[in-house]
Image (cartoon, rainbow, N blue to C red; front, side, top):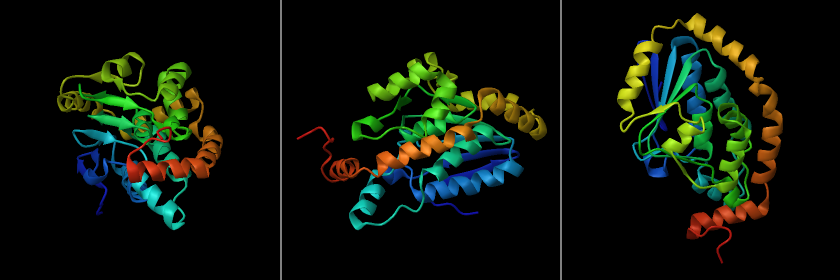
Length: 254
């Protein structure tokens, strides 16, 4: 399979999936979502572990505002609604493989969705985590079911309201990050030495059980999509995003 927004390679039963949109800050567009679905569908049968990573400076910075602005100005409809991205995160959280997020640099907005949906989150000292949606009148509606499941309601609530980045140490204290070191690649290798011993059958059974134990994420999908659709169809919010792309000014700036 060929990919344009991802780098995908297999090493035995381990899939290394790297976001690869260096000119677009590793932001999420329709093609990246489609390619994630394709790669993870292969992983459902062929992988026991999936390692997600980004570029050294940015893991994933959320929605592609340039793409969103262009579509808004041309009147073109988005190729995918939020349900397709939610389903990617659902595959990460409930699929028959262990997902490791290897976070270096910035993880923001929808990028936090990939982090929170992962079974294990590892990071290096440069990692920073933020939810910037409310700055633009948006809500991290689809991220929050996964984030609350990982770090609890109040910490996710605070992080959403404050909109500012938190350090890797804060993220570990709050339960978003499981372990970090100055360099995360050796940390990933240590984890893989242990995780590669697990069988696909045992992983699949365990993930199904954990999803039931924590409350099925599928049940939270419908309300998350409804809120997401509302905020992304508000003309004032779209106008603020377009202006930000064109001028670099935030909605509250004159």
